[in-house]
Length: 113
Image (tube, rainbow, N blue to C red; front, side, top):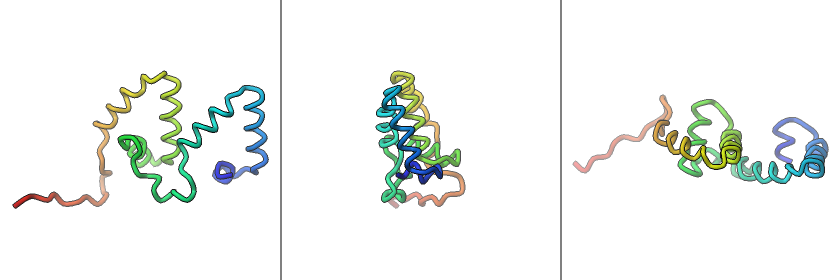
């Protein structure tokens, strides 16, 4: 259980809370699907900062010193809560956020001459 390891809890406790949310509220299945989409797998952690959709969440996580999976989970939850209205803000952030962070190695401009 990757989530249990990340939050330093026993796996049985995470499973029990998930089972209660499925049985009582029914929202546990939605939370499970959202976490599967947002959190990177342990065997793909080295590729977790690559862009998925326009790279906005990856750039926000670098800029705010935030885990990229958490940034993706927040974006997914905002998308669900706003019924799609957050897509406009996502596109605006794509054009406003710099693609390279200050201080990172940039590739030199190649010209034809």
